Length: 575
Image (cartoon, rainbow, N blue to C red; front, side):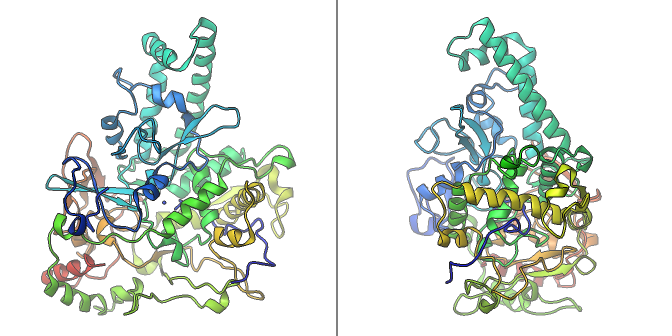
């Protein structure tokens, strides 16, 4: 590989987006039984040991939600019990740590919440990759935790509850007194007044964030409009252009992470290929910050942690897809799966085969790859396929909102790189690439210890074209991306917007798919392959008739017989 004569400039991140990072049941077949209690989760064999897993769960990335001691001391809005009580956190869909109060998590934070060091000595708590990319399924009293799988977290409900807890803490003297006693070494009147003022300021900041990130219709569990929120934070807050804020009304399911670093393009709309740019953008959407106004010396400096993001991405690169745990979920019918394998590669009714879009590895385990001679470092990537909106027929909101949005450049206009210098308005993808690229460049320049040339190449995922070739460019933003389906059984609900509860429903004609179902239960259905839909106190009623929620399109399988559908599902369990 070549590690010389290349630069990482403002466009090092082509487009940003959500970042990507016990007992093996791999699985329970090998390790079988352990002395874990019945409620403790089992872990599948995904090539991580416990230390690697926990580093993914609790490594900070530059997200600043609340001062750390506040988060530990804050009480629930309507009770005097702690906000971080695992039972309370789990009602938002986030997962409790099954090994709390250990060196990697001494204060029992939920998975994906990390202690952020601060220059002034006051630690904060923030969110990290694992909050949205750690899944869990339950079946017959057994819990299986799946690293890199989508969470069922309800980000909006969590944030609103946190805001309510802070508000009530300020309003109720007894609650505030307990809060102050837990935080202050000398809870005198003056110190309490200063703390009260700080809490009020942080509450205002979070209320403003909430106003920018609240959709018209609730997302429910397992979804968020990641691009909408990131662009609101970067274009609206950091650029100080409130007119750039738009209602984030195009939610997507959290993508699964295994294999992602090897793909040519990621994100549901295939808009990102540089892992560092993508991950910096994700930090800026979840309580991070980048300086886009003020002094030139500070321009582009952000809270993102380059070294930590580098290590998290390497960790994800070693993660393998989860294999169907036979002892936990039951055996796979080999005859059905063999018939399903044939169906997977068969075109039907004028529609391409599954394999045409979702490639399979060959006999040696290799997927179709991009040409290595087109890459500066001689690196190949797994090819993904982009299907235009008019062909795929699924809800277009995510793609359209990103591709057609425009934003004011504000005071940054004269400082924009050519050919955009002095432009007062730019397409959102261009402006996002530019602004996140500034944070990327500064992060690389300011990293300590400095990145070596080899590390810089790895940091950007080797995403530089060979000399003389045009830079990498998204294939089609008015489309949705199809990737290999390894581990697809563990990633419900389905379609990019989570509008289909299980694989069986996905193979039905759109007119026969459920228009209403419940999300929030971790109970798994191994036959239909997805979470069970059932009402309950913490269940969200999904309405597929609402904008952004449409369960139309993705027509393959709609003309299969019912027996053929079950055969195909059986094969998908093997991936």
